[in-house]
Image 1 (cartoon, rainbow, N blue to C red):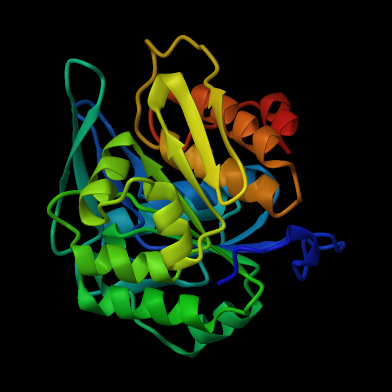
Image 2 (image 1 turned 135 degrees about the vertical axis):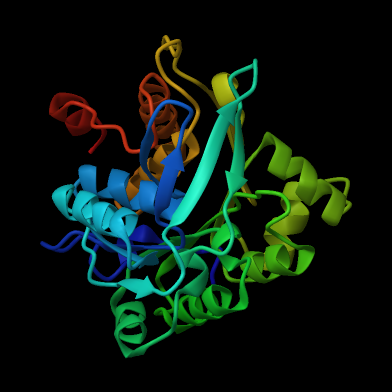
Amino acid sequence: MSPDYNPQQNRSSFSDESPLIVGMGELLIDRFPDQQRPGGAPANVAYNLSRLGNRVELVSSVGDDADGDHLLQFMEMHDVSTSYIQQSSHPTGIVDIRFRDNGDAEYNIVKPSAWDDIRWNDDIDYLATIADAACFSTLAQREPTSREAIQIFLKSMPSDALKILDLNLRPPHYSPTIIRESLELADILKVNRDEYDTLANLFPSDDLPATLIETFGLQCIIVTLGKEGSRYLSANDRFFVPALEVDTSSGDSVGVGDAFIATVIHHQLRGTPPETTIDFANRYAALVASRRGAMVPLEDHLIEFFR
C-alpha cells in the first residue's frame, strides 16, 4: 500500500488492454416494496465499471436456486464475467429495502447468505496476481469465511495494484476490528457522512483525515455528502466539488454511492486529475439517482461522456 501510487505506472492502464478491476463481496437481490432487482455494492460497482468500458471480474457467491441463476444471467448479459462467482449451499442473498420520508434507504440484510460463503481457491489466487485494482467493503466481511478470502486476495495483489475501500457500514454487520483491518489494506477510502462520523468516534483526532492517512498509508479519502457534493482529502490537497442538480423524484438512493466510486476508479486508473475525477463521479452518481434501482441502464451517449 503506497500513498505515492502513480496510475501512470500501473501495469495495464496505459497499454492496449484496459485495466482489470475486481469487485469483491456481495451479489444479491434488492427486494423493494413493489419489485426486486440485482444488487450488492461490489456487484453494482462491477456493473458500472463494465458499462464504462473496463475489464471486470466479480468475486462473489450465489445460491443453487432461481435467484442465483437470475443473477448470473443478468451479470453475463451486462458483460460482467461470472467466472469467479461461486455457488454455495446458502441461499442467494436478499436485502429488503424500505425508504424513510426523507428518501434515505433502510436495509434489512438477510443472514446467512451465499455471499457469506466466498471461499479462497486456486482460481481466485491467480486472479489476485493479475488484478490492477480491487474494490471491497466491510459488509461482505461479516462472516469469517468471506472475510478470510477477501483479505487474502488483497494481500496477494501486486504491490502497485490499487485497493479501494468503500466502507459501506450496515449495522450490525461490522465491528471496529473489521474496520481497522480493512483500512490497513486500502489505498483509497470512500465514506458517506454517517460513516465519517463513525470513524471520528473510533479514531478521536483534531484532524481525522490526516490521522487516517498517516496511520493507514491512505492515498486519499473521499467523503460523499449526498445532494451537496463530495470532499476529496489527501496529504497534500483538500477540496469540495458540488453535486450536479438533477430531478430525483423518479429515482432512489440505492446504489448511488457505488456508481460514484466506480467512476472514481475508472478515472483514477487513467490518470485523470482528482478534481476532474470527483466532478465526473458526482455527475454520474446524480444520473443514477434520477433512476430506480442500483444497476441503471444509462443511455450509451451518456456513458460515453464519462469514459
